Length: 209
Image 1 (spheres, helix red, strand yellow):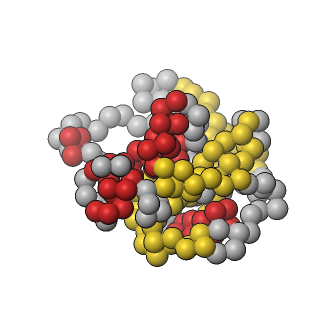
Image 2 (cartoon, rainbow, N blue to C red; image 1 turned 90 degrees about the vertical axis):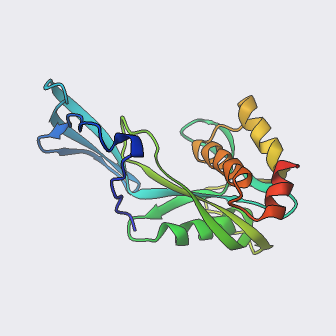
């Protein structure tokens, strides 16, 4: 489930393969339950010698945008340590490398938002910041929602809000919602609604058309 096949854009099939980086071994600099940092003597595509460090998370990031039949979405708000500020996001979490990310994201939807979903559609499979980390994230959209008990992580204090999908897009544009998984998945959901990839009544409610 965690292997990533190499898929080239269609426009790249007839183009020459660019030179590659070369790693000449590695050493472990940091090792925690959540991530490692590795150091690599390397050769750049230009032939230049390099000293490269990579952050390697031990989880696949997951997230889901919960779509209600009236065109609203459930958002969760919490204070994020790394940013030291409050963040509004869709329900998100991490899947350990021995867990199916889809199982993890269904758990996060229940734990953070108190929701279960009857219908799921894969949205995005992304590399978050490929200059310094190999972190992978996978996101979904879900609908046919019903309430279940919430069970947040012991470190989390979460507030939920149910907001119109178009308001979410407006707050992204305003810079009030900055979480990358949420931003990317919201735009993908907009595209899916416009392109007929979601049920017609749901898409109409989301778009306000």
